[in-house]
Image (cartoon, rainbow, N blue to C red):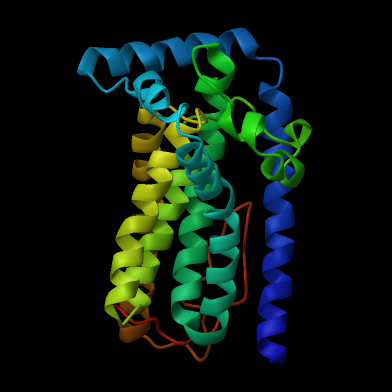
Length: 263
């Protein structure tokens, strides 16, 4: 139990550091309204060019059905951070090897996302045009209370880490779960979040695609790093080395030397 508490406490410090970096990026992009709007127009033009500009059409099908709006809001609010945090705690307790994989993939993809947020700010649909309804603000008070607008980077639409990290969540559930319901949940949850971020006008469709690419890149980098560690350890086993430690501005944790399952 003491080990679990120690791990959770260290992760809280890393998250605090990540939040400070996030605020730095937010301050850099806060006044970039014209740039963010221009980039949003570029995103929308690209979607129109390939026929995936479905945001307005999707919302038009939802707004007259309050239960669908509430469902999209509920998924967007409660299907992200609450599930991610609960899964991290569960992995620390029951599947420590997968905890490091999931945590590192989030940190790596988050680092990539921060670079994109800083260099390519994009206005989300809800702030781009009155054509798009901010369903979370209009029909729900919970999310804007949990994350006040004054603390949120309004121009961090690309990539959608809301979707990307839920994709990582689904992959983790799929790898850890041994029962059919976990497989079903692993597939349904990312799809539901992809629907929710667009239906609530928080992201463009291309944001979702970019979020998937960034998240999968983070996971691929983590897995490649781990394979290199396994290879080095097999050639010259050290007395004690951390198989999942990553050196970055966000985290340099002390890790168990237990090899994580490759299944």
